[in-house]
Amino acid sequence: MSRLADQHFIVGITGGIAAYKSAELVRRLCKQGAQVQVIMTQAAKAFIAPLTLQALSGRPVRDTLLDPEAESGMGHIELGRWADTIVVAPASADFIARLAAGLASDLLSTVCLATSAPVILAPAMNQAMWQKPTTQRNLATLRADGITLLGPADGPQACGDTGPGRMLEPDELIECLTNSQNPGPLENIRVMVTAGPTWEALDPVRGLSNHSSGKMGYAVANAAKLAGASVSLISGPVTITPPTGVELKNVTTAKEMLGAVESSVSGFDIFIGVAAVVDYRPAQVAPTKMKKATQTLTVEFVRNPDILSTVTQQPDPPFTVGFAAETDQPLEHARQKLKNKRLDLIAVNQVGGDDNPFGSDHNTLTLISQHDQVELGRDSKAELARRLVEEIAGRYHAKNPA
Ligand code: PMT
Image 1 (cartoon, rainbow, N blue to C red):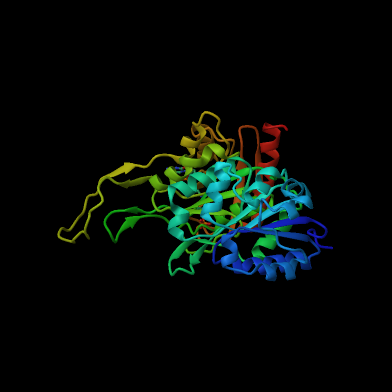
Image 2 (cartoon, rainbow, N blue to C red):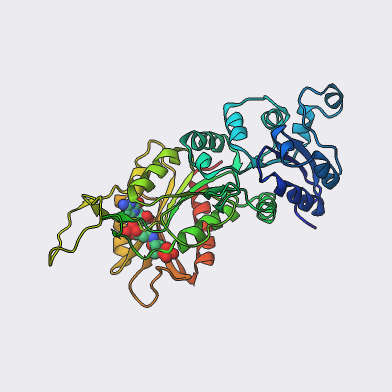
């Protein structure tokens, strides 16, 4: 039997082109035996007909707050009580802003405010709207209030733009909703992961970086999500597909990565730094392509800020995990980093040998804390990430008993 069977879902639909995907979401939820009540905003009805959702869910769609007839039956408070889960898909920028402000200006926002059930949002909007500081502030508020965000995905958009803001596909949402019914060791825990390399420009065409592919960091983000966490993934430039159901922020430089981390890390319980951050950046970035006029070239580099140390210096730091990539004496160097960066745990991998982890689908990890050392051995990055997350969850809960 599906884990969704007999669960009561309110599917909220707000105004956006992705509303057409909601019909498939409702169909799949019902097929798995869930009971579904659809609530639409007025704007949503411009994109998809309530009759379609009524036919698929087997229940009349609710769309009005001040409807005496509906309120005499199952009113907005009863709707909030009836729901085991509320999933708003698509969640528009406007709806996110209203929810973050605590407004109860229509039936859907009122039910979200009145319910004690988990509220899950699948945002969908134009990439520029998604990246606006206002939207990001609203999302940070909602995350801090315990609301779960699924997506958005990155890619081509209906408006012709490309970037973050596509609603997750119905099958991806169903997978996340199914996992959310089976609480993992990181349920209700917020995890931030950095991944990939950074790129430090020398001029408009050249720069300093490294061979990190993002595979290890993306696997860790996915494993944390599967363990029930709400995950924010801050990624340097990579070409691999991000895991679904995590919130992705793309950055280029170490300073941008630090900015993205600093702006929201205070709302997170666990921080895992998998990114291969470039330690130095050119002191000057040439505005135009540098010409090869001389036989030698001397470039001055300045130190980049240390992201992990910035995190552990917060007033109430999250449980902080670092990675150490070392060519020699990996355990000694990793122990130094554990101490200097005041980490709870560090995962060590040796680089440069036959088993170089950069770009590979496999890795070999050893975990070191102040008190112990655990060999995770050699395995696929997905499996190592699963075991690493299991270790982190155990240690996090031991440090923060309920
Ligand atoms: O991306 P893949 O191809 O899958 O490869 C995975 C990996 C080898 C990149 C990964 O497993 C790994 O080891 N990541 C850390 C690489 C690294 O930068 O190690 P480091 O020893 O230089 O840094 C130690 C820690 O400090 C890391 O957690 C790093 O994120 C952090 N750091 C480093 C520099 C800096 N300015 N700020 C930081 O926070």
